[in-house]
Length: 491
Image (cartoon, rainbow, N blue to C red; front, side, top):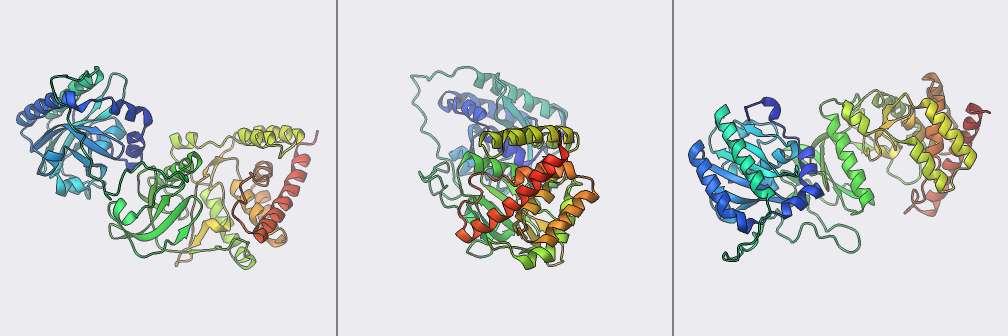
């Protein structure tokens, strides 16, 4: 475990995903603290003396916190509690990267500088190595802590790695309960709100009320009520460590809502190292589960009403189309790009099974999609005028990204076309001219056909007038898609 700058992996999104991995949590649950705490305490006492550090810990990282089967040198009351929430955790990043984490001075670290462990636990210098079971699960970390800056030597880091390896071997073995030793009562982990079990979900399917001012470290709400609410989320405006920001909170606890929210976080996080050419919100923090914080100046939604606003549409459509074209020139990292490949053939088959497209249409769509397949471009995925804000500077910024990914070209142009009023001939002509200019008629046809074949719940919750307007736009787009499909795939 030699020092290596590349090992300093403190990606909050990756850490949150790894911490919440169900298989890892099942492995964590098998560690019987009552049978290993004395052994762990002996280990950390030896390590602290050998390394000459302020403290040493055996840390098991759980879903909402960390417990310390071995702890030596922590300040009160943490030494007595032998537990801390994830707001006080450096070890979660060891779980996320599966690699050692070496910090000389956390107060100067770009991610850890405001971690609560610095003030509350006295963590300034940190060196931790992953505790890995024989099955490959990272349970937590063995770490050494100093209350002053420290340059760790290669010898010290190898010693810490050796201690972590001993813990991994110990926790991999079955831990029978010692009948001669009284069971240790479960440690109650500190909660950020202290209001009850964090995993409780009401029978209604909606998660318990959340207050980001107390649940999310560093975020403060500017005012109430929330600035926006939808079926799946609520959005508050506020400040995150003195920076203007918004926080999105997932409020619907279904598998689909969780998947959409997790994907949105991945997209926003990917914008950080390789930002797109248009404003898309700056990722600041998330727990990859229910919270997402974005910074950026406040803007005005171009369209907030349910029915399309013709004035807004005609005024801003050209700018939105140009911005969407710019967004399509951006690509995520190579690994993410592969992960975000949209399966158009699966989408065609789903609509075919739902009897919303005919056998002949499905065959033609499969053929055309296969012909277009070699070219992929990033797209918002569900771009409408509702997804666009205008900043005080006049620039446009996009929101959403629930369905963003690598599509066949012209996906955003197709979704914009579908959502324009059916009699907005100038808007439709502008989009079609853009499609022809970039020679994307074939992929536009595939995207338009799929976008104009709505799922059953696409209009859920709208008014009668809203449903009528939406169906008119769908049928107009569907008729064009049908004509184009047959023209381009003539037998």
